[in-house]
Image 1 (tube, rainbow, N blue to C red):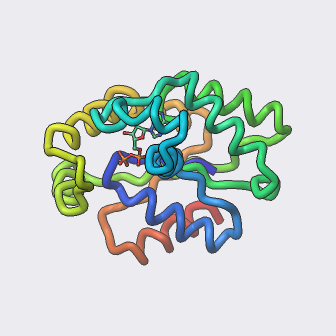
Image 2 (image 1 turned 180 degrees about the vertical axis):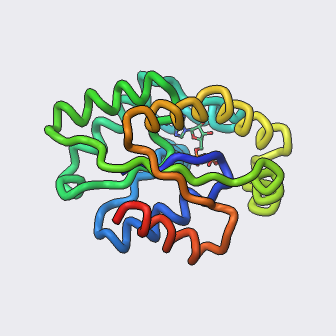
Image 3 (image 1 turned 45 degrees about the vertical axis):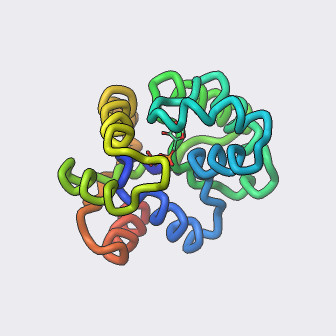
Length: 180
Ligand code: ADP
């Protein structure tokens, strides 16, 4: 399953909750990259500057990261992806990786939240290195690169829309209902 939505839509929180309910791993590419930066690994060194600017890490590098992660044993019974795919090229890569594994996507949940609410939430949860410009840049990149994936997955018949402008419990319940 894939969770799609703008920065600040609550994807991370909901991914954890849903994954626990469904007993599958929640795989957050943002978390994986932040962990790599914190550890000072070679991957971390390569992505640190790009992440801090609000830009996207290259599709090629992300393909390696996701391919390695999805090949792990804990993904055999399914998994929930949060933060991947984020570009048209990444949807193609994901399809290829899943083909190789003999898997396919069951659901893509789109968490929709109005823009003003996104900015408000982003300013509230601001990480140390997040300036308002970086937050705006993330939203801009999201609109240009990631928002078009909603139409792509809609055409593929996989998209389920969930209103994310509600309490966390209501959103979790609506997501579980959407994939029932
Ligand atoms: P946000 O804080 O915008 O919700 P995440 O925590 O998912 O974003 O990711 C933080 C950063 O990590 C992104 O702004 C981007 O630089 C990088 N990143 C995460 N996932 C991807 C991806 N699929 N492709 C490219 N870059 C990514």
